[in-house]
Length: 225
View: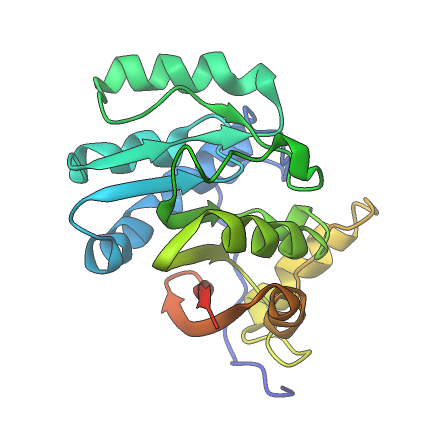
C-alpha cells in the first residue's frame, strides 16, 4: 500500500508523553479517548451471553468501562503483570461490576500460563492497543491461545493502529509510528496487518474482517479458519 491519506497531523494538546506502562497517564488518556468507539462496535458484535476474555488488560480501564453494557456476559480480565491486579479489582469495585472476574496472569509467550480450556471456553477474546508496543510475535501467542480457548464460532478482536500491505493508511499514523520509533525501544512501532495474519495462519486462525474506527484505528476480527 503506497498511498497515504492527506491530512493535517495534529497532536492533541492534552496528550501526555507516550508511555506504555499500564498505570501511566498516557494509557489512561488513550483509553478514555478510544473506549466509546470500541464500545459501539462491541455492542454490535458481542453475543448476548457467554464468556469474554481480555488480554493485556493493564489497569482494567476498558473491561470495567464495557462491563455495565454487557451484564449477561462473564468478563475475564488478564495481564502478564500481576502488579496491576489490585488496580483492576479497585476499578471493578468502584463501578460495581459483578460480571467482571478476578484477573488472571497470562503471559502470551508462555503457554503454561494460559487457562485450561476444560475450565471455560470463550466466545470473544479481545485486546486493545497492544501491538504498537509489543513484538509482532505476540500475534503467534494470541493465535495459539485462541485456537485453544475459542468456542467454535468465537472470535478475536484486536484494536489499534496498523500498517496495511507495508504502508501507512494516514499521515497521522505515519507520524505516530515515527514518534514511537524515535524512542528506540526494541519492538516498538506499528505492525502490519498482514504480518499478524501470517502469524495466525499456522494455528488455524484467519483474519475475517477489518473494521475502520475513528482516529485512524482498526478492529481486526480473527476467527477459526
